[in-house]
Length: 216
Image (tube, rainbow, N blue to C red; front, side):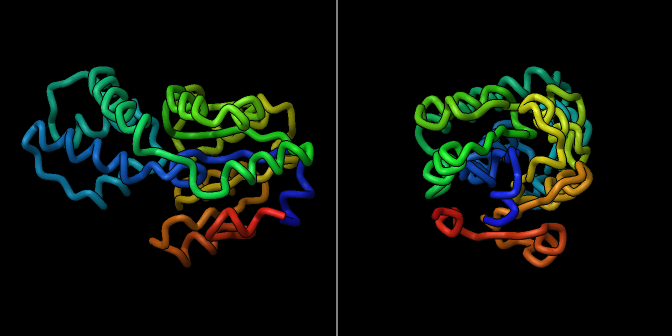
């Protein structure tokens, strides 16, 4: 709380930080590989693509599994499958909405820096109270660099109108934490997944396990 209150802006990652979407992405992957009758190791694949934009993930998948497909076709397939789940299965983590409204009421500006596509912003159509407060939504596709490059955070800070040192970043993965650290500002870990707990804690300035902890 002390870190947040000392800043003018907050930059959030999306998947796994604000939104409980990782299981949905796993279902998209299972469907994708089953359709092509390919075997894959879910954890190895997840580790390999962490922080990559969808376009880069598609290219990685084509190269790794020798697919005779175009990256844009794969991205469109993932978009369509994910969008179906978007409407039914994917929600903000508990108390995220209350926390974001609390930030807005205290005059702290916030935006989102994600490896996911711009289409993801549509999720906030279901949360009109907070949608109007999100002042920037930047994808790795926009900056043509994947995490752990800090480019997506730096661009988000720029669009929010602040120097990166005036911001803090919320992240949930090792790759994201490394990128946030490289951006040069304070980093808060959303410990929504206990995998690699100690490694993640070592990269952050502060951490929490439930957004309820951050609400006054």
